[in-house]
Amino acid sequence: MHCERVLVDGKKVDETKERLSISDLIDMGYTGREIRFWLISNHYRKTVIFSEERLEDARKSLNRLDTCIRALSDVKDGEPYPELDQLLYDIKSGFTGAMDDDLNISAALSSIFGIVRHINILVVNKKIDADGASKIIEAFRYIDSVLNIFEFSDPAFDPEVKRLLDKREKAREEKDWSLADSLREKLESMGVKVRDHKLH
Image (cartoon, rainbow, N blue to C red; front, side):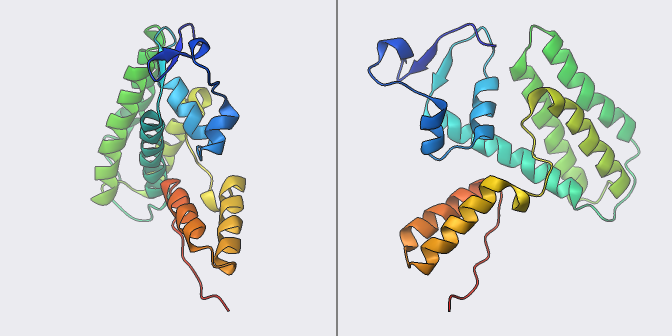
């Protein structure tokens, strides 16, 4: 739902000669999830401003979320967090409270990223155990039933990741190093660490 204009280079889309479509953005190298995050991060009654910088910001924001989820998924040992119930409450209430305020998505995302910073500190300092980490992931799933921006599955099984990995492998076999390097950067921007094997 959006009730305002979309601006490209400061001009309304219908006043520009160029048209902007989702497929155009995908051709530019952005994923559907990145485009979705960029779009929903704008309030429905405010102008949506298109720029590659804003899409790059969306990509970085999603990387922060992905890094947090992976870190929680990797928790094996650690201390039980004594304030876990309060943290779980804060995750859900911070989000629902903001969304109840005329769908204040900016406040909702700010609440999420504030919680993510706190969680990262807990994980690094081993102040949370695997059970607590699992419960936090479930709380994020609750939020994601509305936003659909989190990535909970292993990115190695993501069809888009597999397509890019296959394309990069072919580029390496054909010694197209420029394409291989650009695909590596794209994969790493999606949170996928690329390990090369020797070519025969």
